[in-house]
Amino acid sequence: MRFSVYRYNPESDQRPGMQSYELPDDCGAIMVLDAMLLLKEQDPSLGFRRSCREGVCGSDAINMNGRNGLACITPIDSLRQPIELRPLPRLPVIRDLIVDMSQFMAHYKAVKPWLINDDPEPEIERLQSPQERDRLDGLYECILCACCTTSCPSFWWNPERFLGPAALLQAWRFLADSRDQAQSERLADLEDPYRLFRCHSIMNCTDVCPKGLNPTRAIGLIKQLLARRVL
Amino acid sequence: MNIPGARSSSQSGFIEWLLQRLTSVYVAGFAVYVAIVLLVCPPVDFEAWRGWFGSGFVRLGWALFVVLLLIHAWIGMRSVFMDYLHPLWLRLSVLVLTATGLLALGFWAAAILLRVAP
Image (cartoon, rainbow over all chains, first blue to last red; front, top):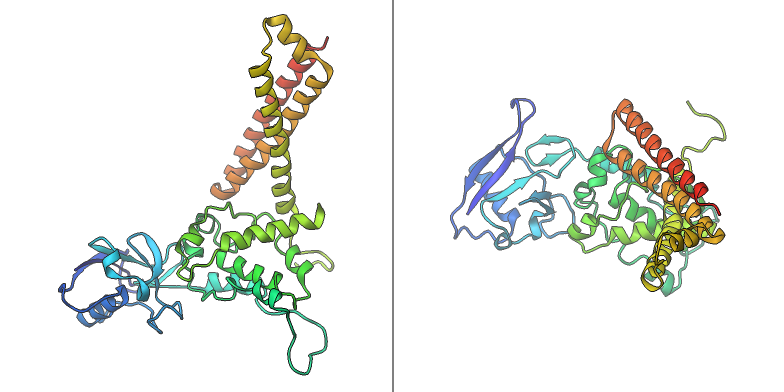
């Protein structure tokens, strides 16, 4: 198996480069992450993030043969060789495949991803009907791996100002929550030309989401809600 | 600087998005109407064409079409420039050129519509 891996150490390298690696075909690697762990045995200087190795934590999101995904749930057989491994696009590289997620997390924080409810806390819990709870399906499952946001051209062009699909999916997750009381404030924060409205429904986000979520639909529903308030 | 009472965001993104969609409804509808007229009962000669084009309602329809089309084009072009043109001087220059071009088209259309008045 042949690999071409993005290497960059800002402390010692003038510029990034691609390094070739090889593994025997019978090395036992099934997923890309298995192969990366074997490569790291070969070359301990190779840097990447990983944790749960089963598609739950989102740490090992990288770009494989030009497409974002989680290395731990991407079968090697599904990729043409040499398999090109690169960091997530448009985020600053800390080292090799490790990117700086500060901007991504700042956007996430900006949509206030928590329940805002000023009523006195009930004794047990804030109740929802089964239908109200159903509206949160397909929203709460996001693992914040950043595959969607870093594959979005609108984020590439305006990374500081456009919130990106991951943050906007979470914005809708709280707009759609029957227990939340800050709908007007949340909507008002999204009406400027950049935060929400740089989205042009390109749908790269929905295409790459490793959890099968649909941020484009969530963004469309936010726009619909905004329109319904004035029409 | 934090101005008390001032909102951190404006509504302009939403208003532009909504205008873009509302104008497109009329522009598309009118285009279909014109296509049907030309297919079903095309004016046979210049006089017939002028007669149709110069009648009050059709002229009003065209005038509205041109105005809404220019608004639609302006919002769309501006949106593209916001995506791709980041240096302020470049975006401003291109916006001025676009506005000049669109206004020129508007004046030209207005001149035509006034000239065909019966």
